[in-house]
Image (tube, rainbow, N blue to C red):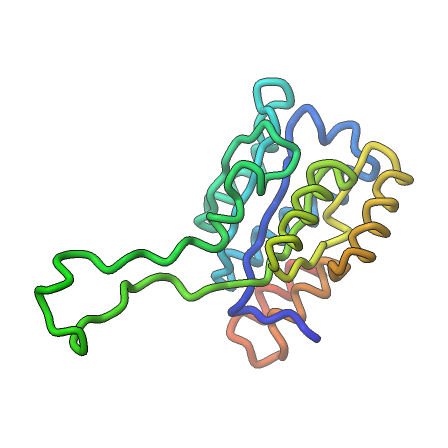
Length: 204
């Protein structure tokens, strides 16, 4: 099973200014998060980002936040470790809107269902800390029947042991574990994709 570009959304969890300096291999983790944000912009993948208790941990790192905004992404603060507890699921899978207007204004066979964005059920997710906010958000997304793909080289914790324990648990729960390059080339599928050269430049 490969990632499907048209079914994917990207979620970046808590790459915050006061947290990243203490993350194991934090510079590499952040660099891969930035690559993911750039790929989302190039390939028009919907992008969401979170900030855990920003008054204490600060906002997301400015360089990454700029890329999120350039990709049309939305960032929201949270206090719960799982972003799903604060409404992420509804952002990723908006409820179907009821038809507007008077239902009797048109014959039933002429009424059209309310238009809405095509459902994207695959969540490509990365973030910090891997064993806390990333883990709890991913487990709740799995519980809500999303397909969850965790980008391991864009995830981090303060210790390697905690990070790896999170990956073990996520794999056991049914998440797919991937890398930034795996995401890039599965979204592209081939060298004929119009964005191939631009995406290739990001991962080289």
